[in-house]
Length: 428
Image (cartoon, rainbow, N blue to C red; front, side, top):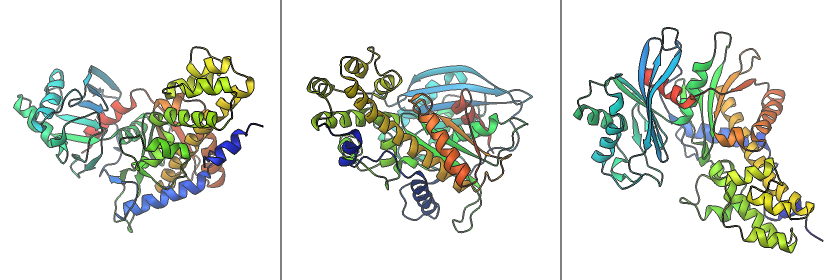
């Protein structure tokens, strides 16, 4: 008799129905440790900024969005009513991706990428999606690049200051301010900017669930943490106190930084596909499939989230790898594949909800239904992966609102990261 999916998952220590509130409390406890500068998993980066009280009117700002392998730049202009428009958009490769660069050459390439925007504004909002320590003047000290970017001399530099120097060498007018932020801060600021006169939000959260995962929220004044009200970047993916299955442990050994980013590796798009393939192959080895189905699964060399998601949206879609296997397998085998993959997606949704609950509790806001917390979510994993968004909504309703009495509203807006980065560039 074949083992059931539930017994298989239990055998490999895979818990898909995690206790969301217990995880949220553990994340929140870690957040408070980080704010007190005690030993914590999450970085809890202070940004020294808040959403502006008034919308930008009659101003323009140069926006840079750099992360991974892409470098985007444009001009964002706000009209007299505060409505933004985007122009002069260009996309190119991130400096340091094709070959290793010195510090001087790295910033020289950025300056070259911005030549089409020369002197169109004296302010720059720079969404720089790498670990940084933010300074009170809005600059950021780079703590490290991901593996794609090869520019070791830039680590430890004040990014804004170095960019100003490179632009000055090219004859730019004086730049008043370059504000560094990451994508979660940009998302939060965009959420605040998109609120209409008919909305009244008590606080804001920015949440990214795409290739990676992270969150930012507004921390109120806290005497015990010696902190004034400001946006905090959590680096949520670094949280370690999570249940990891045999599949997660096996996959972690293959990553660039094993033993780190445990929570991110349970949630985000870069990891869901590979972990699912390990789980399916373990199921084949454990006898959950007929021999022919098992052989086909064992022959799969790689599985992406896109392929996994295609199957979940259409289990017998022959245009996707798993759908083709399921179409020629028994209904029992097809259902086993579906249950395993769905369990991995379910777990991602539950941990995502736990992060949002922890952030919401940290804001100490949202206790009036007419003034909820505004949560701007960004990322294809959140919005497109099979039932993640719907499940997160359901868990927030049940736990955050019904059980804890905290009200919230998830929003999205076009060009949110660009808009948020523009707003960061206009913060004094």
